Length: 143
Image (cartoon, rainbow, N blue to C red; front, side):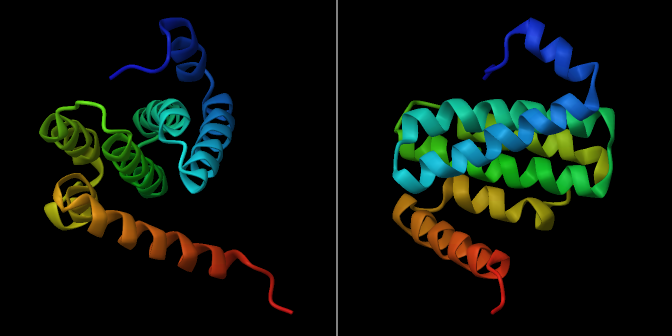
């Protein structure tokens, strides 16, 4: 699946700072559409976020960038399944595993992605909802 046109992919590949800014924008826009239940718009933004996270990982194969890529892939998998669009989920898992391989893409590390891709969707949605709630609680100010 390609979401970025060749020109934008080239621009992001040539400028890691621009790729990071683009990832942040598209990742959080995707999350907003996920929270609103607008799976079609979330698919566009999460696809762009996934491609930009891949560019970042390929340019700088660090553990932090690997975690960013994996989290973005998990969000994309969630959106893809909820959008009900036909997709080869096994191929997606294989692609992410391949991209993660240079930075330690063990089966254990990839298990959350595998769960989102292949477990019953109702269970996945509940699990992700709880995950997002926990993350929101962690990022809220302590007063």
